[in-house]
Image 1: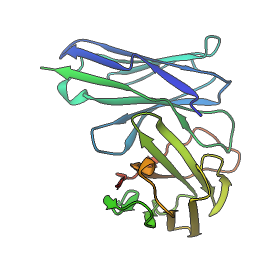
Image 2 (image 1 turned 30 degrees about the vertical axis):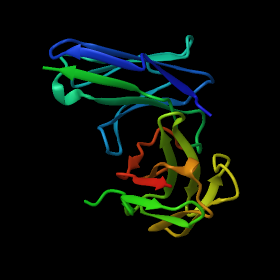
Image 3 (image 1 turned 30 degrees about the horizontal axis):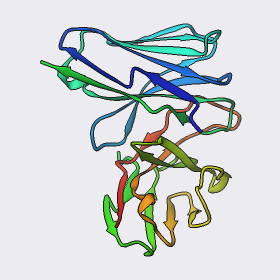
Length: 111
Length: 117
């Protein structure tokens, strides 16, 4: 069953613009992670935010978490063509459980 | 450092045939996951092993699917008999998880692209 749902399903922007993707989930979580998948490849971990954190940065990535709204956002600043990929949020509801992924947002960055 | 290794990368098989997908996790990792990805259903967890023991197999679609992990460096996912609706990308992933810990990064293989005709 799906725990996280990303929004929008698809996003097209120009190089240099910012891209914002949102994730909503259903149940309380321990952590939320974002992963990236290039076409035809496996998923790669980007960033993790714990349930007691509200914001986290990594390079051009900024992740926020609002546990009261059960939602998270991933912001990619100054996007590049190489950022073209699908982005997934994933949650684990308690220690010892596996990550459950959303269906992803497909980002297309054109030059 | 080798990542998660999956084989075969691509397989085309006829309905009714047995399919075996193989996975070698990253050395030292103690958790292994099999996921299935389709356009319609996204990325679904099939089964999760910890220290070679199946912990959660609630995602395994039906009895046609079985998974084993005979040792820490090898796992298989078998479909017998295969059906066209099994066509998907099957991902193996691994992580190191300390007891009671959460929030571990998981590392994915490149996937096995299965087409059942």
